[in-house]
Length: 219
Ligand code: B16
Ligand code: MG
Image (cartoon, rainbow, N blue to C red; front, top):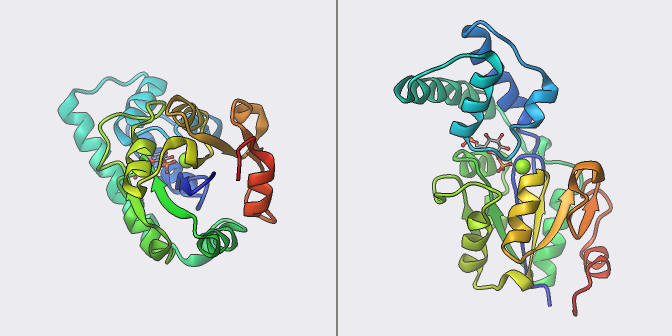
């Protein structure tokens, strides 16, 4: 029986990838190179430090760990400025309706995000009150595809992975959910998320009944 849902943030609840892209691109440009939106896709669900390492490798730039920490902090200042203007209008279509339905069904709700800015973003879009637990990048020591972020979420909800569905937009996030024994729903393109138990284009017109009907789980 499904008793809980854990949501990734960026790409599932809101599209903060565009703000990450703007801030990282500004940093890359300052360092004398550029990168594409296609390359930015590879940063989805990847931690701040790992994202920086990838971007530096694309630009062929080497930096010491101290310099990397300074660059990551600089990018984050720009990113925080960008997300400080977010509004509830930026919640992706159908998400709020789905969360409302989960509440009515008595399903527990957690956030499982790599972002250290996740609590601030939920506040900006006025969704904090929906979440029974918030696991963000400040609470984890291992990145997706390690299942830690979702395991901490399920523990906080008092649930087993087999009772919990993870919603993720990143292939590595689906890997993390599967590695932890969770039900995995990919949000986005089946071409990269085909290993999930179910793939949906988004939450518009998606319902809890449709979720239960699509998973081979006893209700
Ligand atoms: P921050 P998610 C991830 O969020 C983003 O997809 C990824 O692009 C970002 O680098 C990461 O959070 C860390 O974010 O710099 O705010 O700590 O998809 O796991 O919700
Ligand atoms: Mg994501």
